Length: 262
Ligand SMILES: *Cc1c(COP(=O)(O)O)cnc(C)c1O
Image 1 (spheres, helix red, strand yellow):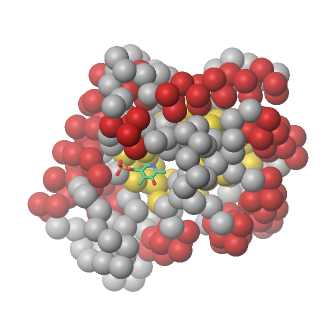
Image 2: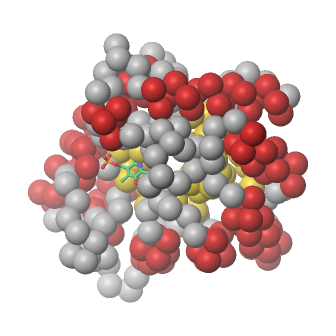
């Protein structure tokens, strides 16, 4: 923790808690008893908001997602070690070292090349050998299910299978949790529990393919899919992790206006 404690505005804290609880209730209503992890996406939101949700006795939320490596690093230094961080943004090879050194980085969900996997694995291995209490780093392989040029991620098929295989066989300090997709915005807006999102169909097929090709038990890999617009539909299709930002924290401002601490 920083030496000057972060201020928590009680009105802001109670609004955040009720928004998070309402998302949790909506998750429970569609999950039918299956566990679904809620990652609260706090990118561009101040550390005070995160602490408010982490400290609130009613929720004690631990899983938070960030998109920018430097912002995650700064927040991790400022906030309690009990937070479980997720890196979900576009991953650069140059950021893999600093990310892998964050002891309470729980997962990287945007892994898309072997080189980045090898860097994360090597650096996490160094961290673990100096402090064996630090766990392996969980990863999701990101799949570009919509084929949009603007989206990162492996192509469905061989590229996805090969990267997953390399993580499992060559990266002892990484733990492959499953696959992640962002998907096309238009498909996201059209998603309802009745109207299946094509990106989610592709991700589920890729998960089945990877399990088969790697000889893993069925259901051993999870799907990270679903955001504010479409998380209920994603859960109906088998998602094990949803990443929800604006429904919890409100609309995001621009990156220039973002403040680390308010
Ligand atoms: C920003 C972001 C989210 C959350 O989006 P909301 O629409 O605010 O819920 C989820 N996943 C990724 C990869 C993101 O970048």
